[in-house]
Length: 593
Image 1 (cartoon, rainbow, N blue to C red):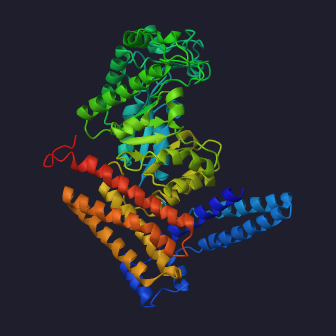
Image 2: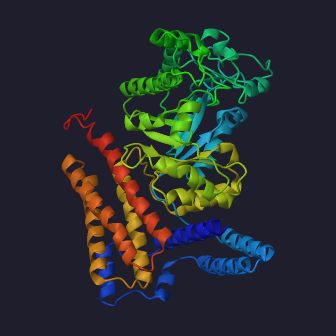
Image 3: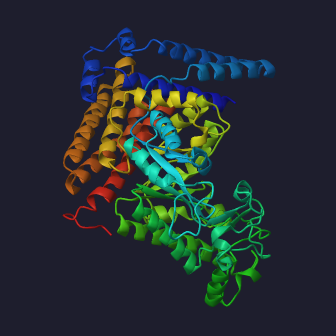
């Protein structure tokens, strides 16, 4: 309980600092701010309060102090065994923070603000006019990237010449065509969200008033394309879905053709692969999947054994797992190559599970680390769905450990179902304090009017954001934008806090901070290998020294220092992504591949 409340207090305070800094008139030069401090020309605290344009934040400062008092009282009561009273203080502290959470002004950086627009919401729309309302709501909320459910349970949302059947609940219009148009009119990107290997869903059969065990429009025509469990059952025991065989060449050709059709016939900005895995299995071998006809033949040809006869104790079991992992990997690589040749600007993303690597390989054969390392994808979207910020942090941290030097952008997922509006905002603020490049919200059906209003103030048109920069489109510009926001926070903090820090440390911080701003501006103005390397070197130097500066600056708490360090780490990944996308595609520079 202590850790949870301390975390909420820290995020609240960090969010308040961001909001105050965004609406201040603080000097943009850190070196000049430091010099003012050293010259004893600091702005007084009273003057700093005037920089905050709305008095509502006085309540937030009061709430922060009250929550800290209640945390102390909580500890006092716990030490004396008064647990009922202690819990009451703990709940009261949380409530005062939730009630006064900064939510009426911009707290968002330049980032990917994704949202999954689900099949159910699309089908209910009935027409383009109805879809307009949904896109208007997302635009007001500041969403800039929409993952539009385009293939679900083998049904396309659009009239396809390759897929056997369009979703029967969509009649006399093309939702994908309308969605692309509506998104682009609002300055948003539209990415086609595709169920990859999951081909049948019993729940969807019931919605369509079809027999529960109907095999869908694809597998009913090609039953040999499906995988089964070790007893020959196609339907997964838990999800009640049927999966295609990733080892089947006809399956891969069919799916590749569908993706090419979407990319060719529609001006989508990206392809988003979901269910890019095998169904969940038991690592003990009680429930295992993947026994498609093609997979069994290929594995037997390689090893002399039919995999359906193996169990987890067999010496070849690890090879059977590796075989299935490689089938998914090969498909991702093939799709990446094909789509990039077809449309080089197309963004490829994947929805993945954030579970520990070895467990994930055993249970669903999803090796997204390989996709990231090989740069087959552009965006990785782990489904880090949680009911609290603490749980979201626990789920996201292991993913971040795989992203220290990668050139793929990370967008953790937040599920809006069953969480309050302010908890959704708090989870977003947690991610903004981690080295991520944005987030993805599941799903549009849960974007209620109150949450839309909060998002409108914190990241939408009401937040004062003049221009939306997308990290995957303008990585160098976004790096500069995010750094300017970070530098503004530093300058606001330095201006309004007594630091008790040695002069030479402050001067070094100020000098290097301004130097990095200059290098980033030069890189934006003239993207080149020379300017990139100079910027990267300057950022590296600042990142290495930053922890020592924070330790020497006693008035900066541990969480705030970590947030700033994380933002610097994210800048490094954005630079690497920008090098990959912008410099290596420049014909004057050639290719790094």
